[in-house]
Length: 332
Ligand code: RIB
Image (cartoon, rainbow, N blue to C red; front, top):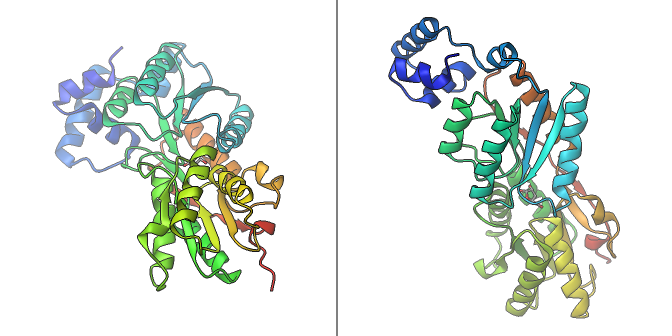
């Protein structure tokens, strides 16, 4: 049975160009399109969903690659992916990549050997080599959250830029006068856009200085260390915007240890809206991502793709919302 590689070879073009033509996910000029059509006819090539069906290889199984299963944000995402997959009769294999390129590549090969029907990437290490491999394996895929937006697939994300701005505006509306930001790893588009949202919102104020922005690692320990640095640099700040809830937990811990009252002396806001924000003391104000909706939508898009409903690839950006709680409630 001819593969997409055979089509590309006969047409004298790359696998990713053939994949773009088949998925209608980007421009292909008329001459190239004709060459591809002639090659498909000559080889009697069957695209993935038919090929897999003919070969009796439909496994009704999809995979979700996650970058960090220890962060509660991702299990909440996975819950939605699985709920929707179950409705369509699919099972889900969860893979933890630890954000490592090598681990991700191993998973792609392992999943291919299990005749996976499709893959959702919530990690950010998907490279062109992976894209070509998935095309040659005829494995449909979609991207989620921190995924690369290099236009090779449909992506579901939330509006991180607006979320960063909303976090700052809420602190200003609460009466805060000098706001620091603990940001996540800048190789992640999610962290980068939140930082941009913060900076665009505060650079107009005379109190702003780049030293008010401190790097974290999207974890509790990183949040603690960044808070210590921030408070040492600027003991006069009265608010901290943490780029995710786990780093905000670290900030609450260090401020408590320093005898600093939240929110009276320093207000704290996080980002993600994980359930644990309801049990901290004080309860954490956060910018909640539409986590369940993101997982449900991306699962639906992938399954439609597997079953032959080839939509134009697009980036779906969902709205975030403010959940205001006691960690930013200023008195007076
Ligand atoms: O908390 C983990 C972070 O990584 C979330 O903000 C999510 O958007 C992902 O990028």
